[in-house]
Length: 136
Image (cartoon, rainbow, N blue to C red; front, side, top):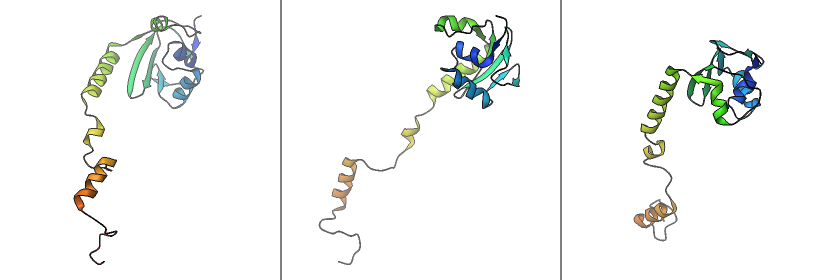
Protein backbone atom coordinates (compact mmCIF):
# COMPACT_ATOMS: atom_id res chain seq x y z
CA UNK A 1 0.00 0.00 0.00
CA UNK A 2 1.61 3.23 -1.13
CA UNK A 3 -1.30 5.67 -0.78
CA UNK A 4 -4.28 5.97 1.58
CA UNK A 5 -7.15 8.42 2.11
CA UNK A 6 -6.37 11.01 4.79
CA UNK A 7 -9.61 10.40 6.73
CA UNK A 8 -8.95 6.66 6.85
CA UNK A 9 -5.35 7.22 7.98
CA UNK A 10 -6.39 9.64 10.75
CA UNK A 11 -8.85 7.02 11.99
CA UNK A 12 -6.32 4.16 11.75
CA UNK A 13 -3.65 6.26 13.52
CA UNK A 14 -6.16 6.85 16.34
CA UNK A 15 -6.34 10.62 16.11
CA UNK A 16 -10.14 10.38 15.89
CA UNK A 17 -12.46 7.72 17.27
CA UNK A 18 -14.47 7.25 14.09
CA UNK A 19 -13.83 7.85 10.45
CA UNK A 20 -16.86 10.15 10.25
CA UNK A 21 -15.37 12.35 13.01
CA UNK A 22 -12.15 12.54 11.00
CA UNK A 23 -14.15 13.55 7.93
CA UNK A 24 -15.97 16.28 9.90
CA UNK A 25 -12.71 17.71 11.24
CA UNK A 26 -11.23 17.76 7.75
CA UNK A 27 -14.35 19.49 6.40
CA UNK A 28 -14.07 22.14 9.14
CA UNK A 29 -10.54 22.95 7.99
CA UNK A 30 -8.78 21.60 11.08
CA UNK A 31 -6.51 19.25 9.12
CA UNK A 32 -3.78 20.25 6.68
CA UNK A 33 -1.43 18.10 4.64
CA UNK A 34 1.88 19.69 3.66
CA UNK A 35 0.52 23.12 4.62
CA UNK A 36 -2.63 22.98 2.47
CA UNK A 37 -6.23 22.33 3.49
CA UNK A 38 -7.48 19.02 2.18
CA UNK A 39 -10.61 17.05 1.45
CA UNK A 40 -11.27 13.65 3.08
CA UNK A 41 -10.43 11.77 -0.12
CA UNK A 42 -6.93 13.30 -0.38
CA UNK A 43 -4.35 10.54 -0.56
CA UNK A 44 -1.46 10.41 1.88
CA UNK A 45 1.91 8.83 1.33
CA UNK A 46 4.82 8.25 3.70
CA UNK A 47 6.77 11.45 4.27
CA UNK A 48 3.76 13.80 4.17
CA UNK A 49 3.37 16.29 7.01
CA UNK A 50 -0.08 16.39 8.63
CA UNK A 51 -1.12 19.28 10.88
CA UNK A 52 -4.28 18.74 12.88
CA UNK A 53 -6.09 20.27 15.79
CA UNK A 54 -7.30 18.10 18.65
CA UNK A 55 -9.29 20.23 21.05
CA UNK A 56 -7.15 23.30 21.63
CA UNK A 57 -3.85 21.63 20.79
CA UNK A 58 -2.25 21.76 17.35
CA UNK A 59 -0.26 18.65 16.44
CA UNK A 60 2.16 18.26 13.57
CA UNK A 61 3.11 14.73 12.56
CA UNK A 62 5.10 13.14 9.77
CA UNK A 63 3.53 10.09 8.16
CA UNK A 64 5.83 7.07 8.56
CA UNK A 65 3.50 4.30 7.51
CA UNK A 66 0.05 3.55 6.13
CA UNK A 67 -2.58 1.19 7.43
CA UNK A 68 -6.16 0.75 6.35
CA UNK A 69 -7.20 -0.99 9.55
CA UNK A 70 -7.47 0.40 13.06
CA UNK A 71 -5.21 -1.59 15.32
CA UNK A 72 -3.99 -1.29 18.90
CA UNK A 73 -2.50 2.01 20.08
CA UNK A 74 1.16 0.87 20.04
CA UNK A 75 0.80 -0.17 16.41
CA UNK A 76 -1.02 3.06 15.53
CA UNK A 77 1.79 5.15 17.06
CA UNK A 78 4.23 3.56 14.63
CA UNK A 79 2.33 5.10 11.71
CA UNK A 80 3.54 8.62 12.51
CA UNK A 81 6.25 10.62 14.23
CA UNK A 82 5.40 13.86 15.98
CA UNK A 83 7.73 16.78 15.32
CA UNK A 84 9.85 18.25 18.12
CA UNK A 85 8.11 21.63 17.88
CA UNK A 86 4.72 19.97 18.20
CA UNK A 87 5.80 17.97 21.26
CA UNK A 88 7.17 21.11 22.89
CA UNK A 89 3.98 23.08 22.19
CA UNK A 90 1.81 20.25 23.59
CA UNK A 91 3.89 20.09 26.77
CA UNK A 92 3.68 23.86 27.23
CA UNK A 93 -0.10 23.79 26.73
CA UNK A 94 -0.44 20.96 29.26
CA UNK A 95 1.69 22.86 31.78
CA UNK A 96 -0.34 26.03 31.24
CA UNK A 97 -3.61 24.12 31.77
CA UNK A 98 -2.18 22.59 34.93
CA UNK A 99 -1.14 25.95 36.36
CA UNK A 100 -4.18 27.97 35.31
CA UNK A 101 -6.74 28.63 38.04
CA UNK A 102 -10.03 26.80 38.15
CA UNK A 103 -12.72 29.14 36.70
CA UNK A 104 -15.26 28.11 39.35
CA UNK A 105 -13.03 29.42 42.14
CA UNK A 106 -13.30 32.98 40.80
CA UNK A 107 -17.05 33.07 41.45
CA UNK A 108 -17.45 34.87 44.77
CA UNK A 109 -21.11 35.68 44.62
CA UNK A 110 -23.81 33.61 43.11
CA UNK A 111 -27.00 31.87 43.93
CA UNK A 112 -26.91 30.76 47.56
CA UNK A 113 -27.20 27.15 48.59
CA UNK A 114 -30.14 25.89 50.61
CA UNK A 115 -28.15 26.33 53.82
CA UNK A 116 -26.97 29.79 52.74
CA UNK A 117 -30.54 30.85 51.96
CA UNK A 118 -31.69 29.77 55.42
CA UNK A 119 -28.85 31.71 57.02
CA UNK A 120 -29.77 34.81 55.02
CA UNK A 121 -33.41 34.50 56.01
CA UNK A 122 -32.51 34.08 59.68
CA UNK A 123 -30.12 37.03 59.59
CA UNK A 124 -32.66 39.41 58.15
CA UNK A 125 -35.23 38.68 60.85
CA UNK A 126 -38.19 39.03 58.57
CA UNK A 127 -40.52 37.46 61.05
CA UNK A 128 -44.14 37.40 59.90
CA UNK A 129 -43.74 40.11 57.27
CA UNK A 130 -44.43 39.00 53.71
CA UNK A 131 -42.99 42.13 52.06
CA UNK A 132 -39.90 44.25 52.38
CA UNK A 133 -41.89 47.50 52.25
CA UNK A 134 -42.28 49.61 55.37
CA UNK A 135 -46.06 49.92 54.99
CA UNK A 136 -48.00 47.08 56.58
